[in-house]
Amino acid sequence: MNLNLTDAELALHYGLPADQPLDPSLREACAPVVTPWTPCPKAIARVPNPLPVPTACRYCNGVVAITHHRAIYRGRTYGDWPWVYRCEDCEARVGMHPTTNLPLGTLADAALRDVRNDCKKPFEQLWRGRQLGRTQAYKWLAKAMGKSLAQCHFGLFEEQECMTAHQLCLDKLQEAQAQGSVMANAFKKARQ
Ligand SMILES: [Zn+2]
Image 1 (cartoon, protein in one colour):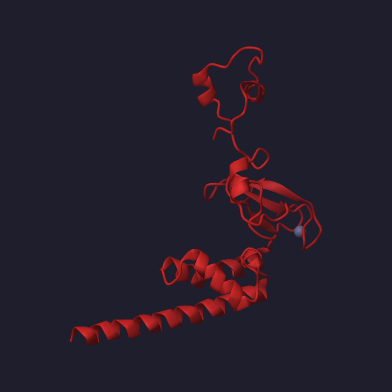
Image 2 (tube, helix red, strand yellow):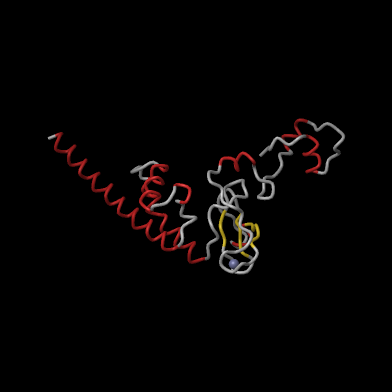
């Protein structure tokens, strides 16, 4: 990804002579690598309500460091952006928005990560199943949980909030399915 760096900056980045014009084809080939330390400014600007970068662990006050997936998943990486913030002591962690250094939520220990993942499933079913659009689904959930839209994310929820959201989404799914069958019956009757 080219971040519109000047030729001199690119030369510096790749250890090329800075006083000579950069070959244009080289410039394309030299697109600098985007990392959490050199994130993409456009991607950062697109993240709504960015959260502060964690420095101290909220569980044990340990040091939080940028860590590559390879160090966590035995050499494997997942998704487009293989970086997380991780506590060096208790290993609580949280992912980042792709090509940025912005955390996706608050640090979570293993138990909270599991609860967040599990409880998010019926919510995703709601908007992926087109019962609601994604934004609509977040608006609905925020209202139902008495939260602002900015605070309504599974990455920010504690265990109890995950459980509440989970139940609300299951009820909403059931309601949508019941409405769906009422509609289906109405169409069936109308055709008879
Ligand atoms: Zn910790």
